[in-house]
Length: 410
Image (cartoon, one colour):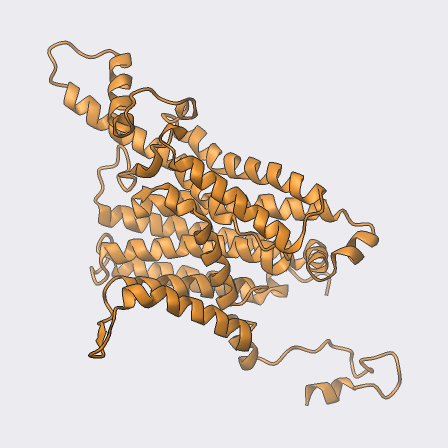
């Protein structure tokens, strides 16, 4: 048993990766950019964004479903990842526009004049033209990519260390994570935050220096999102499959007992919290270039609550459940809020599904919690029966006459 490979012990991971690869290949072949043109570019972007939401759902399931930390602030890390890459995208796109507009000038502009013009273009909407300190490395893609990982990770490290060392648990920890997200959102709404306040960062769908059409770029991002989801799922499955996974499940079920056994509960929780924050930041960095814009509303606490709802509907405590929940809710939400579902006129009242979608989502969460706590992923338990350990015909329990292996399989 110990010599079996990771994939042999976790066949669901192989199945997931194969399905993800097959899905990506089929969508690429049917796309406008690189295939038969049967799927529109806008829907390709929707699918790419959905894969990013599935990735943050995997992170949420790891921190909540397996470790028992109900974080209502993980979308803050998601948004920070988007802001970090968005700064480079907006800077370089604006630079291209400024350089092109100044190319016909009789006297070639100096580098400082170009920088000043870029600052005016970006920050003129908030009444400024100077680059804030946080934009110091906005012209470097490598540094901004490092910040995609570093900024969410450092925030999670500081917050987690302060919270876990104080042994804040349960609903109090959830409230703290929500307060952190609210504070960050309110700060970003300010014009002097350095990130254009309520206007946010826009035009992120345009890749600087890339001449390819949006149809092609959308497929590239679909591939990148699928690759990130596959690697993130594989990493999460590896984390929960061994001894480490047993310890964090123990922390979820009985934290006091795990601490009594000598494990550093705070260290395990902090590691998972930081790891999932980094995964969320990467997901955000891939999501917002496909969305084209990011603003502080994306970091609001309600987004993190939605994330918890997705995981609950899909089935927390099982990684594929988180993916199913996020994909299902995201696509159904797009269907309802995109005006594709016709309104129903009852005579005395008109049901507009764009307005009623959140009510439906809330009711779904309540119904799943009450009647299907294992979520959509729990349906797989009806397909396959739980496995029994191979005892080679011996008793299951220590006493003679306890349920025999043969009886258990019947």
